[in-house]
Length: 483
Image (cartoon, rainbow, N blue to C red; front, side):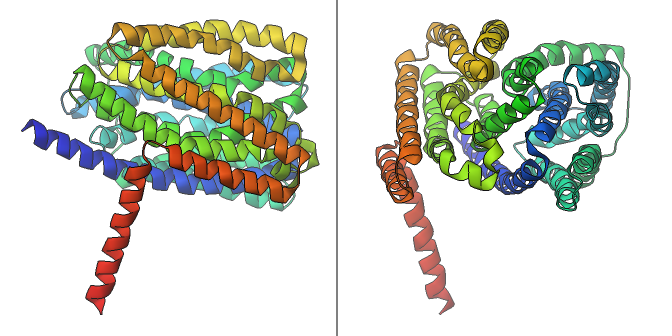
């Protein structure tokens, strides 16, 4: 019975991974195209105010994770009353956040000397309000490792925004494009999720259920916020001291490095479900953790490394000469982002096995370090204060590593991965310098050599080669049968 359960979980996880990879792969290509058009047409100044609106939208998503997590981790199948209370709970949170933004957006617009910010934020809160309902609908399917609803909904969100924003930007109206795109993306994606799940939208209010949802949601949402706000909000806080142009440069640098980090999001979403349904023995946990990290870094390191290392060559061509400075930021933040990707997976392991307070404490310490250091360094180091902050805040990782040791997880494995990631960041920096000082041919040759070496040294090399051979054999068999 236990082996059958593990097999079913494994099959469901693989199917879910395929759906998520398809969703994020398509979304990645669409976002890249949209980013290029908007950045080239609008410049750093427009991208700066767009970055502020994306932080607002991100908070709507963060506030929606409470009910999403509550439904996924519920031991029993949620009944109609519970689901109705989740829809109501998310409505209250979204209304509160919308009102807060509308009240303070004039102050923020004045601080950044941008009168275009208030209309953009108004459209953003109107569209972002619907995110809470969408996450409830997606959570109902993801609790069973079924990601088709989430994949279709999230793709429709990306398609809606980029479809509107890109068309208007190409027509010479990039600002109007992001205003309309932010407004309609949440509305349409939520409608798509409800239709795909065949889930009716209804509301209930039960005091006891609301209290249960609140007791889970507030600490869980706070935990997610502590994870993601430094990534999405750091550039905005730095921009309050530097100005809207530098804000745009910093945010696009971070966004570009974040593109391959969608792999971390996939791993996190799958690991939360997988870890919560596997045995709690140390050996089981370590084996699952190692497999997830091996596969994650097999793809993440070369993807992020090549984007960063070759950025001196492609950034001026793709985005334009005004964006050149973002390459310097990207090479500095690569290792901190890889290290925090590991911490996110380790946190999901701890959370899924009843230790949510431990990663919560780690991210709390990380944020306590991050924000004051960011303000101090931005005032003293200017544009490079934010990327340097990423390195300083990594000191908080020792908190989580110590907690893992107390839980029985081998910390030598964690330090081994960190060493490999540091070496990968060093090689990326070397290739980055080659891209600056050597010819294009030499740069491409060095990139190919480093990628091959990474593949040869990867722990999952045999598994990948075996999978490719298996697929080749299946194709050959089908071809022979068709003849």
